[in-house]
Length: 394
Length: 227
Ligand SMILES: Nc1ncnc2c1ncn2[C@@H]1O[C@H](COP(=O)(O)OP(=O)(O)OP(=O)(O)O)[C@@H](O)[C@H]1O
Ligand SMILES: [Mg+2]
Image (cartoon, rainbow over all chains, first blue to last red; front, side, top):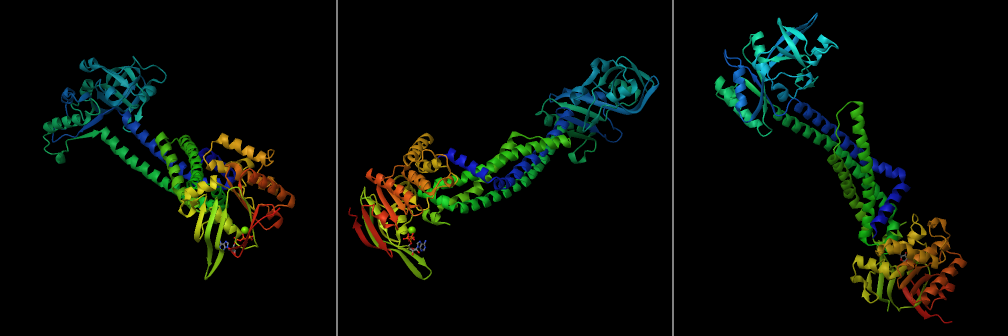
């Protein structure tokens, strides 16, 4: 039995019955399209959220200090102790306040002043668009230098290059040494912030403690060890006895958050895909229906073929291949339409969609499986016809 | 001996009545014979032919084809016999309407597992032999009845089976086309094929070497044709 010949004949049969074949395939097309479309949206959203979280900085731990009793903050020096840990590669404590920033006649109110150190860009994945961020000497020598958020820079300086200019904060003059690259993530934007060395901030804000520390673990594997180490130290400082009684500080683990979100969106994607798969199943039932009609219509043909020496398996293969070709073509069209759909949705509604090869393969593979599964019964029925009964069929 | 029927019955149960389509039929046919089976309508000719062609099985009795007891053969073995040992020619041609003449003739070769190139070549030769070399790519409905029957003969001959069975192959044809088909049959018989034909037409039966008369499911006369 010649498979190639059979496939050719199956194609010819489909072309001979264009409308019927199309309607039969429609179920599969819609099924595959919706699987690909929905899963693409799911995966796109996951990818986008993941990217946003990761853009906050790799292996980031955020420590918030609430303190205990009168001891509500941590000193800069205490915070920097964490850097001794082998699991920690960067520590950026923050002292912050809302201030007014002036330049000439322009001024900006309610600016977030962030006193921090040279580790911040690495820890938070920030970068400057011009000039530079401050370095350890700036911090150690208490230099009055400032790095402006991009929004502040353009509000105060317009088209003038702010680098080397002076801004006034709390009555002190600061030399502008850099402008941050515009950024926005789930944890806010730097655009309306001004960064100065933490040692300077301590003085001009008359505040001797940090409430927020951004800590970068030395690697993905170091995150949990770093977390344990931080907890141990802070427990000692604030005399926290058990996890349940800990109101003194909080540690937010970015990777933990990522896992949770990934888990949730994976479930979502599976659910969407599952719902779409049901329509594939319905498409399969459509194929079975048409194949059964086809077997009845072609009973005589089956009889003739058997009289000429076709074995049961030959007839079975013939109908199975037709069912496969139907579902296969439906699958291919479905993949194409699904791809276009997710691309179009992405463009039209600026949704993030992501069509991955595995999804395409799974959706297509599923349509083939549907073709085989729902083709087997009609094909078997055709194969089992007795030659004389089939030949006599009117 | 190609065919050996011994006390064969075919009984159709219709409600409480049983129709004895074949009633204790015994028949032996040797290689190279040209046999015509004649009898009135409903006498059981087609029933007999279908059993001879391994399309149907007897209710009772023994049928040996080329010395093999057919009742002991499985579906695949029967398919192989129909494919390689027997060529069928039907009254209504039984060509596949969607296939061209060439593709119809290729069918038995396809089921015999022959290569595409061989099939094509052989089918073309067969069609040329029955005078249809110019009609290779015609669909059945684009051919006359006589031409369709010649395609059917080419198809029956494609796998080179030693036995040709015809159930009224000239029944749907005009006298001239019928005569042409009979000429082909006679030539085939001369070349060594065993030929068994059903016919109503005594003029056609006369062209065979042997006439088997059947009536009410029984063989009533089995005679050599003289002349
Ligand atoms: N499938 C069947 N079910 C019931 N009875 C049948 C069946 N096939 C044939 N018969 C009966 O068996 C008898 C013989 O039928 P058969 O077709 O062999 O006749 P025939 O000699 O070929 O007639 P014709 O010359 O008209 O073709 C008839 O009485 C017919 O009614
Ligand atoms: Mg008949």
